[in-house]
Image 1 (cartoon, protein in one colour):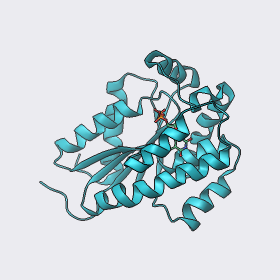
Image 2 (cartoon, protein in one colour; image 1 turned 30 degrees about the horizontal axis):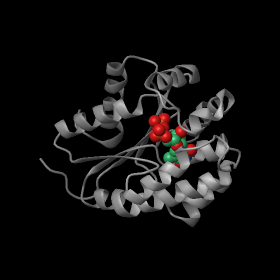
Image 3 (tube, protein in one colour; image 1 turned 45 degrees about the vertical axis):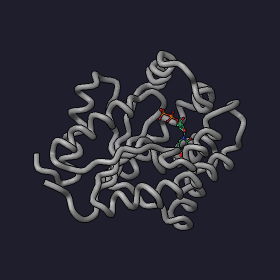
Image 4 (cartoon, helix red, strand yellow; image 1 turned 60 degrees about the vertical axis):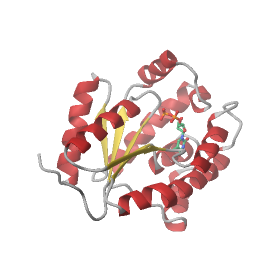
Length: 213
Ligand code: TYD
């Protein structure tokens, strides 16, 4: 079976160490087993140029960039990624699974970074016309658990160095977005064994995106 026509766009969001990459890999396998074509990608990044912007964003001291600069850098990377990878893949009928997308900007720069949601939404929506995902899964874990998982694999990024209070605002920010847009954004309790989380995500993909059970 092959998919024709526009594919579906599913984004995975959450704080640090929520297990997104593991769960995206699991979801990709589950969708491919149903005969769907799947493209896995990530932000910031996903194209050569956007990966260069990613390095600017993730390296260096926590205070290297202002939130406004971060907003403009992630938006620039996203414009590249959308035009060169996401839109063409969807048009070709693929399911695109993206590790972080515009809700990360709404939370990290808007709600936790202090720019506010109105400015970030105006830029990404009205001004730049970034496509909304068909479904967004927010993997929710306590800040402590997420940061500890991350320490285990080493190499903290610039955002991980921003401190506990910032990461509490990130978690709260994603919960706020999920409460405000329940049709698009679903909170998934990711403080559970990988298998249990993967099963819930597959069930959500089936129920929300019209797949055969
Ligand atoms: P990454 O190592 O991918 O984090 P994780 O593995 O937790 O997903 O690094 C991406 C970092 O960039 C992450 O700390 C969040 C941040 N970020 C933003 O601040 N704004 C954005 O729009 C995006 C996409 C990411």
